[in-house]
Length: 234
Image 1 (cartoon, rainbow, N blue to C red):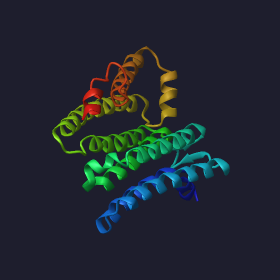
Image 2 (cartoon, rainbow, N blue to C red):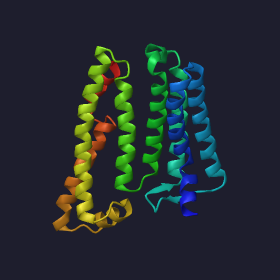
Image 3 (cartoon, one colour):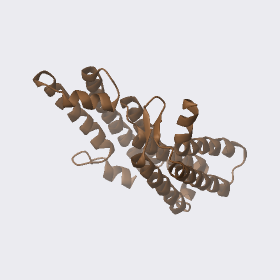
Image 4 (cartoon, rainbow, N blue to C red):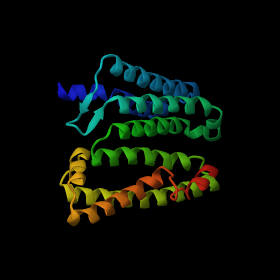
């Protein structure tokens, strides 16, 4: 029952991931633009409806042994990211004609990146946070380079290399936190931080600095925003 409840609580994310796979597989057999766009919008609608059902049935709680938590915070971002994905899909219908051969991949990547961001909002464990971050990041790497012209390829390569560097920095910070706390749970790490003494405080500060730098790059926060102009231009 616990596993079924976990699946129910992650329904919005799973719907997006499932439809991303269905869109890619369907495109191998039937290449119809309206079918790809319609399936993408159906995925977004299904995700929003499922999220609304979680609210209506008050199905808040932890999932998969506390690695993920569905609460008001994560549900808010479920609605936000799914809604943004729907707007992007509608706004880019004409734009996607620029790479007609890869339209299914384009829409599947939008759904996958949205699912990754939704999972990130629900993550309360370092491993889950890393997986959600990379699910989003890898999708965005491919989206940036999808046009396959000189500018987009250059932007995609720069984004990939800098993203790999930021991932390494983030992982190093996570490794330090795990070494200090002996756990990947954010709650346990919080307890260790609260009880820090002079022997561990310097290492904790170093871990936080690495995490802030790695995550700051992925969020394009100052002063880690140098990649943004090239990526937007490409």
